[in-house]
Image 1: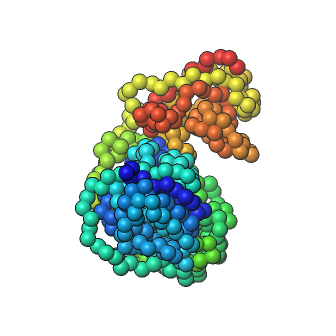
Image 2: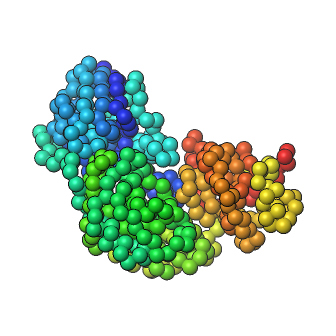
Image 3: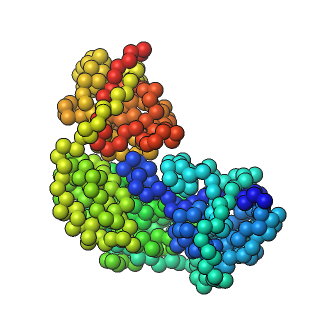
Length: 283
Length: 205
């Protein structure tokens, strides 16, 4: 039987993701890749895939897949009701359906299948970049997604004891960014003193946050400059945008700070309405 | 040179002028320090993105400080020739701003040798500079919501070609049939930092 799955339903947004496209930023090609890298890597590890195997990133549940062959599957990240394989690899028999409900906490669920999703790569990666439009098309109901052959042994782990993303306030570490000195003296205390709320205008590109505005000291125009995931860019509204996987390669608004790289994965699980607190750190 | 913090995985190097950026980028692209996964030039800065599993920011900073900038950063390779129909909607405005006839704007645009300085706006978009120093064109006061792919444009000291349809605030002076970004070609991006470019007037306006 063919190693593949048929997509019956996608929920609000399901994309194929891997480790992205490093090394091409000078050509205007962003890295992209899984928003919550830690969860995506865990999913691959649990089914004995290499770290660069492609997984599905499911936003707010709702995915349903039918297996064409006996396949080993796992879900990680946001826990969806009735997901029998959460943090625990399980066999999905040929003809059986994996159906994800809406998660009680967290936003993004990762589905890995042993062998990896084998859709055609674009510029060296199977990641869909929603900003540039590069990569495989967004997953649609009716798609048949091929699955590769297993290359590594199973790790022999029944269950990974990891905490589910929380539904309450998240606290993350923030470091001063390249343009902290473009802001008033009080701005850093403002940023780190009160929580910010994730708005519904958030996506794989970034989290648009609502909360106290940061006051600029310098109001001249900043020539565009390169940035990475985790940048807290301050547009004219004064309210931060936290950039995630599909952030633009360069930006023209000053970056006041950076969320520590490991903590950006936690931010990728925040839903609209949830709050995040930035805790000052220097390392 | 100032080295500015950019989180736990990157460093932003700020330089005096675009020429210094290009010289440092050329040297770093030639000999990328260990554990650096991306080097991103821009107008005044070079961003170095690291893999923290391989290197530390301190090691990368030391490597940058040791790097000898390459002043002649232009590629020795062939010049990319871009045939252009100079019938852009803003050509007359640009000519008026420069106090020139449109034909003289075209003559200067085709007469200069351009170099790809950096990218970043979209996949395959290159900010091109010329050594003549004769370009300083303001952006349009209100950006267009839709600029067609292949549009040849000016803004500030830069010229560029829109790789695909997108919003944009640059002044449009012409169009080219050449796809500057094509996924079926390897490399997909025609205009890479360091490449030299000449625009050729093919008439038909």
